[in-house]
Length: 161
Length: 201
Image (cartoon, rainbow over all chains, first blue to last red; front, side, top):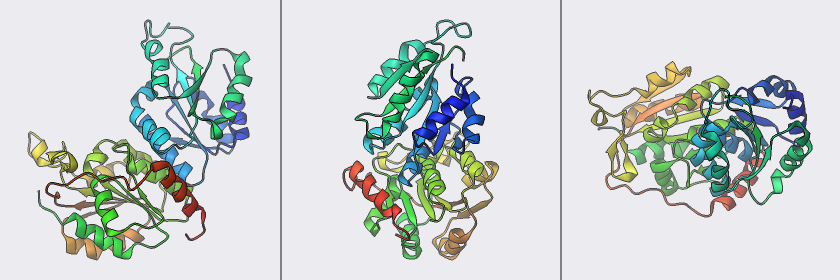
C-alpha cells in the first residue's frame, strides 16, 4: 500500500529516531528504506520486548516508534500496558492488520475478530488505514502522537500473513 | 537452594556504583535496592511488566551510550524474556551490565520454584543461566555463588566490556514481600528523564 520511502520520510518528519520492530510481510518490506533514512532499526525477538526497548530509548532521550503485526500486539499486551499506561510514555506504533484486505492465505483469520476490540481495550487511539489514498490521514494521526491524550497507533490493513 | 544473601550482594554493589551509573531494579531486587537508598539515576521498575527489565536496560544503554547501565534482574523475570539475551548480544551495547539474581523461586508470590530450579524440574537438575547467556552470543559472562567471590569479582564485572551478564546465586528471602511503588510512575519518569538529560548527572 505504501512504499518504504514514504513511511521512512513520514517517520523522519515526525522526529522518530528509532523503530523497534518484529517484521511481517508488509511492514518488513520497509526496513531497508527506514535504515537508509538514518533512523535506527532495532529488531527484537518478541513484541513484548519492543515496548520495553522503546521505553528505555524514550527515557534516554530518543523518540522511538514500535512497528509490529497485530498478532504481536496480542502477545505484547502487558508490556504496552506498563509502558503506555503505567508510565505514560508517548510511544506511537504502526500495527499491521493481518488478513484485513483478503483472507486468501488464512480464511477465517480471527485477527479480524480481535484486533480492534483489543486496541480499544488497551485505550489506544488508533486510525485504521485501508487504502493508499489515506496517506495524509495516516500522517496527520502519527504527527500528533507526542501531545495526544491517548497512545496513538496506526492500524494498517494488510492482505497476507 | 543455597546462595549468598541478596541484601549483602546488593550492598557490595551499592558501595561501588558510580553516581552517574543508571541502575534499573526489578521485583525483589527493587525492594532491597530501595531499602539501601536510591539515587536520581536509579530506575525502580515498579510497577513493571515482569520480564522486561533487560529490554528496558537495552533501550537505555543504546540511548545513553556514555553512561553505564546496570540491570538488577531476577531469574523468574529472566525466564519470561530469554529472547532478550539474544537481542542484547545483537546490539551489544558496551555500557550495559545485567546482574541476574538467581534464587530459584518466585519469591514474592510465596517462593514457588521456577522451572529453572532443581525443585521445579522433574529431573532435579538446574538451568545454568551463564551457559544460556554464552549460547545467546554474550561473551562477558560471570558466575558467583559466594559473597566473597562476588566481592572480589565485582570490579571485574563492572569494568568488563559489555554487554556483561553476571549470575549471582542468592538465597531466597523468607516471607518476602513485593516491592512497593515509591510514588506515581509518570512523575518519576519525568524526573528520571530530567536527571538523565543533565551531563554527568
